[in-house]
Image 1 (cartoon, one colour):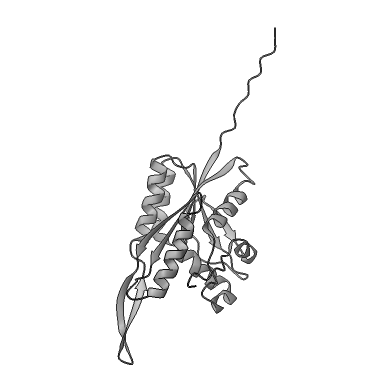
Image 2: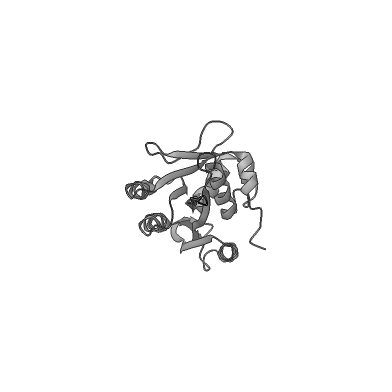
Length: 213
């Protein structure tokens, strides 16, 4: 009788990476001082970040595969900051045209912080991005879109979303920049794995493009 061979197909571990872009950008600028020289310092390619984080995880799970990178950021006003608005639109368009990369945006909110030389000074801030990001993480788990969620952000408001994801049986990991001395802010939950990324890692994923041109 001919031998019977049973082949067991390896099951892929689906990894989704979620990036709080402004948080990541500003975090890099704080950790690596020379990046503050030019506004492009701190910019990253989201897909490169996702690929790096998945590769790091293969040390303990070689079957990991990147299924999506979702990047969230605020968009400057075309009225109050036309050049920044145009630059952001170009950057987001590049993301939208990149396979596996899904950008999500919301308009920045502006408030008056006084007047200088007779001109009103406005301060921009993100409103609703953390909620949008939390929803993306939670709904992705509920719809079984991934097995592992990796969140790159230091915003503690996102912790409830991560706790919810774990309650659904999904694995949760976070990423944080590591300065040359000490540690930067990171999200912490019991038993959570943090991917610390240093200066060499930043150089691997940096995006030096000047989108204002």
